Length: 297
Image 1 (cartoon, rainbow, N blue to C red):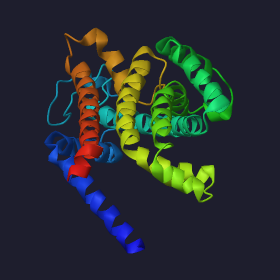
Image 2 (cartoon, one colour):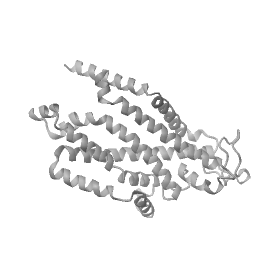
Image 3 (cartoon, rainbow, N blue to C red):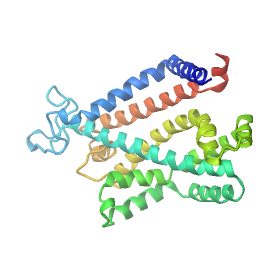
Image 4 (tube, rainbow, N blue to C red):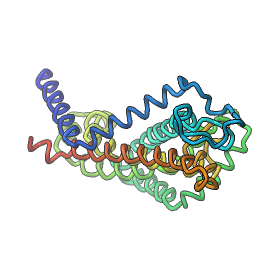
């Protein structure tokens, strides 16, 4: 019996992988995203520091020495783009994981137990949904940056918390809706009749059936988080200098768009490329986890 279940799970995994890579753009997007991650991770191997200034090489055009040119302080833009990728990708991933975790916990409890638990948790969720996101992000960014608590001195940590605090509601509502449907299924009823505890049914029986939609939602969350972080940094409320980010590089380039267009083009293109890659991965995951197609195969 156990061997049969393992074989079925392996077959299902192969079907999901095969369907994912049938989506050609999703496969290309995976390669692009991996390339961005590796390049950002190895950014320290670049001979130029992202913060070292060279007044003799200010606003140099892209060349063999400086692939993406230099900025108004003589800093190598390519190096700053790579190090900025570390920040943007890290903030996107960490804030997404945190928001998905909170959303799954809230949605699971709300959808499974229902009643007053559902009412309280959903009213809290609705309250968070009414917040004007961009204004709250700016206010929280300004407020937390002024705090003297040690844990808040890391501005990357602050941005992750801010973005996650205002984005967990969508996965929470998604998971709640899935739980409302799945808790009435026969396998859950059978497990309940056999004396299974609520926590076992949530973790072992219902939640695994929500993995597909959660992963797809996670890709959308990550793309949105990267755009949000870039927007905050562009406005000066995100990760603070001297740490480079794609948004802050864009911000410094706005008054030089005609005289030094490469300063705005490269960080803007990196944001575009990353978000597009993540969105195509989400499309591939959506097709791969489509239950109707999987069962048909």
